Image (cartoon, rainbow, N blue to C red; front, side):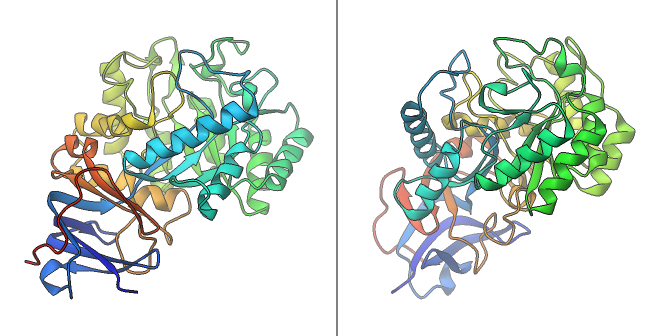
Length: 399
């Protein structure tokens, strides 16, 4: 079989995200076969004029079961939820997203969707799933969670998630802000479990070879999961009281030094209605300070919360541009750094020979213009190409 060779004005290649002007990529049997200058290719099947080919984008924090409506739906049956998951997966793919990590849903539906994608029964991004999140009785996410209140039930919950085929474990280290029946009260501002209980979850998951993500809003919850050995920290807002968030720089420096990835879940809320834990100028300044202190950001939108949909994936990257993160670092949060953070660094996240043929062609130059992320022309997921714009003429122009 002859490899499919795509060329573009630019290809961003390798784990260092190097720019190849007039570059080309060969896809063969679901893998990247070759990457280099278009003029060095044996042939070009299609040249994407005005485009940049980048690795397939990753959203490391989604909720595929949700319809992103004004209320978190808790009464939909499995059939309705399955249709919703399939719809969200197709919409992510059209946004250029080739891998998602689902951090909380109903039963094992996202695991079943993962398997359906891998077998080719439905089209969509690669899925990693935590299935049901671990929380306290009435705690954040209890609608789709496993409610636990002591070490024994926490250990049993982890083992159940292993049995369910989970790729990750998700623990609610604190309450949250999207909770239309707030049985947890002021729980965004204190930990839901003790430090010893967090350690039970993390140690048990690691014993079975699973990594753990922690939803953590306040300082005490962030500190507790970090010291317990958490693998990724979600949100990390340092919420301390209504509309107050003050980061603990000493703690942040420790997290940065260890290299623990942080998914700040930037999305379309930030630059429109704002965020619930601080005035937007404070939230943006805090985010910039985390970056300056060396935190490894990973792109994740929290798709499924009200109004946050797959089509708006790039709005989360816009926030990083807004605070002055360099374009190459922004791209890394959605590709190389994200793949490493979720355990797929040897599978995807870069355009390099031997990795999965996951890539997206964006109209424009995403390293300098965030609007390019809103203009995907082509997406490939394990070499399966979906054209999102006009099909270029065959052949093309090696340069």
